[in-house]
Image (tube, rainbow, N blue to C red):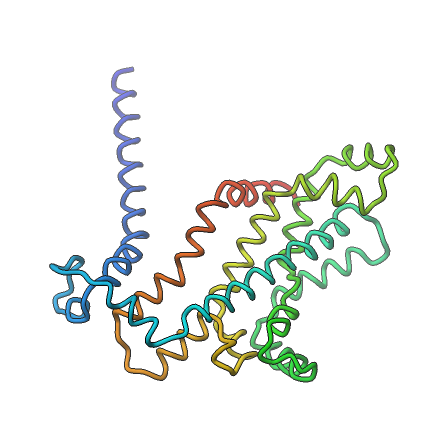
Length: 278
């Protein structure tokens, strides 16, 4: 018995040491970027490279204001990402509820077509999207950025999976009480899927926040650039200075880290629950 307990303790120690090693490997690049964003340029490019420096500075963050209209880029990115996230939550939850709870002709065929669109690369549809937005006169506008992304096949699939996992007795009881289908959705079903809606919102916001090709394609004016597109244009047109570039990377990542910190409870629960039942 003593030998078995000793083996269990040894196995636990080895497991935690392995997990610690994985955490270090995953977090070290982020740690290095944060530290290096406060270094002088000479300390960043020194060879052999070092993690820490003797002196630190905020000059890299001050240079961002000189090089880029960073606050304009952040404002555009927030409007674009949050707008798309809210639209996805509304329309994907409604569509997912319809596919999960309602019976209508061609439901399975329509859902299959939606799933098939997930396999279509963006590069194939980017030209038709640009032509439509151009024809509608929506280039360099917020509505032009948001409208083509107001719904997604992944969001519909995710919300359908969550609604399918909820007990049917809830809506049956609501129908007995005289509630219409719309009231059942908004008053009964939608509040129960908060983990899924938060997860969908976070996923969508992250995708839009980090998207480069799509906003660059639909915007040409500097005042309408999103953060990723604006930074890419800055790096492509100038000699790369690593200090400001790392500082910009931290500024662009910080809002997502804060969002995930506050939404992680719903995020983890939503990912777990939506995978229980199809």
